Amino acid sequence: MSKLNLAQVGRVCVTVADTDRAIDFYVDTLGFEKVVDAPMGDAGRWVEVALPGTATTIALAPPPPGTDAGGSQTGICLDTSDVDADHAALKAAGIDVDEEVTRWGGPVPPMFWLRDPDGNALIIVKPST
Image (cartoon, rainbow, N blue to C red; front, side):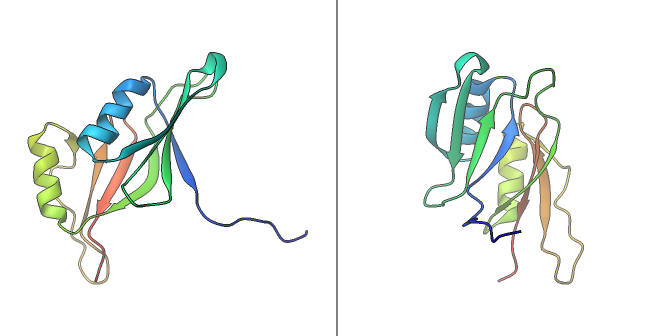
């Protein structure tokens, strides 16, 4: 096999049932910026959001035909400088977050899971410095 031409992780994709609701969550609640919003023919819209100043985006896309949106463990980890403050703020705002910040100790950073309105799980992590 010849060498591939891959350059970076450009975007990750989560499936959503309601694009506008997902935009509200990722932009208004989590602080992302909408960077792409284009029609996808009969399938709906292709929307990408990104944290300010970052290259990798999250695509908020309709699910493939015949499948339901959401409900996945996305594997997306969002770095924070204050995991406890972010957990408290999201919990106070009524966002579906874990009851507590998980602390395994050692080199494993403190983290918690949150779920978007479609049940897609993301992790907020305070990386080791």
